[in-house]
Image (cartoon, rainbow, N blue to C red; front, side, top):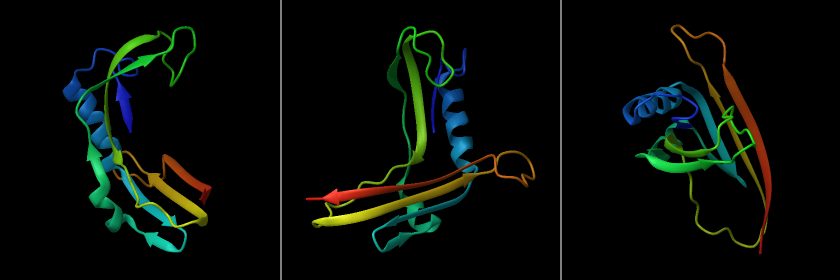
Length: 122
C-alpha cells in the first residue's frame, strides 16, 4: 500500500508510515503462483518491505487516487514486493490473490483481488 500526504492531508511521515503498515497488517490471505510453483502467505512474508519516505508528483488537472490537486507529494509504502530469477523460455501464468480485513473483530473482507497475468519469456 502506498499513501501520500495528498491522500491523507496534514499527515506526518510517521503517520503515513503507520497508515501503510496498518493496512498491510490487515492482510488475511495472500497467495502467488508462478507457473506450477506456489507461494503461500508464510512464504511471502519475507518479501514484505516498508519504505522510507519518497517523492511522487501527481499530474495537474488529472485526478488520480482521489487527489484533485496535482504537484509534488511525500509518500510511504508497505507491501509485498517480489523479484524473481529470469524465467526460462516459455509461456507462464502468474496468479496473485489477496484479501484485507480491517477493523476490530473484522468479519467481512474489505478488499480482495485475484489477478492473472500471462507472460511469454523469450
